Structure formats: structure tokens, C-alpha cells
Length: 190
Image (tube, rainbow, N blue to C red; front, top):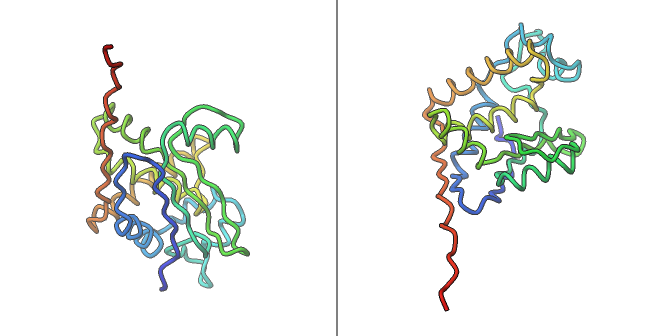
């Protein structure tokens, strides 16, 4: 299996995002993540069609072929995308844009490193694992999972847990690091 083209953009000034490790996350998900048959009824018809092989068994990767774009952003930058494309200016953790298979695009996943850091601190989680979860969440949206209804949200949360377990078993959680913001500048005494 040829690795999928992945465009990674780190637009967060304080985030250290190890590109090779991020690529490995996507390669492992593409190659080894399995859609459970019980999850298929919650998918759109197009997503269900991508998930079926000739033998009607779920395929390891139901993500459409083509380039996948991953973008790491600050809270204000992701909130601006949220406002521009979803008419909601509130901060969020992940925004996923569906691709166009005919154009060779699998989709785009935009994540907020700031939100991951805040959530990880607030809940006693590891920052790198939290930010990886956001990548997984976006990838799962592109595969066909949805989280807008309670039953679909439960399926997605279970899929997230399976994906993180897969990545942990392969020691594939990227070593993300986010430097603390610089202290506020004090005005000079004259």
C-alpha cells in the first residue's frame, strides 16, 4: 500500500509538531483501523460504500483516496475558520473539511493546539495524546463517523478509543510540545 500524500502545516507559533511522527499516525490509521460492522448504519450511504470491499467486509481504511491536509492552529485562528465556514465564531477543537476524490483530495483536518493544551491541563491528560485525539477525531469524520446525535457520538467515542489504543500499541503518539506563551511585556519606566 502506497502511503497517502499528507500536507502538514504548523501555523501555531509555539507548537513543536514532529512531522514524521504525525505522518506515521495517519499511515497506521489508514492501514490498520477497522470500522466495526455495527458502526456502518450510522454512516452516510457514500461513506458506507467506501467501507465495503467486494466481500462486504469493512476495509482497513475507508478514507477516500487522495491527499490529506492536517493543519495545527491557535484558538483564534480556528475560531476564525469556524466563523467563516460554519457561521459560528466560538472557539472549537477540530474542524474537518470533506475532500473531493475527483480532485485527489481526501480532506482537511484543522486542530487547535491551544484547546488541546487547556483541556489536557483541566482534565489531567497528556497534551500529546489529547492533540493526537483531535487528529484521530478529524480522520474519523472523514471516514464517515459523526457525533451530532447521541448514538452516533457514542460510536465515534468508541472509535476514538480504539484508534488511540492502536496508536499506543505501536508507540505512535507524536511527541507534541507546546511552549508556554511569553510573559506579557511590561512598559519601560521613563
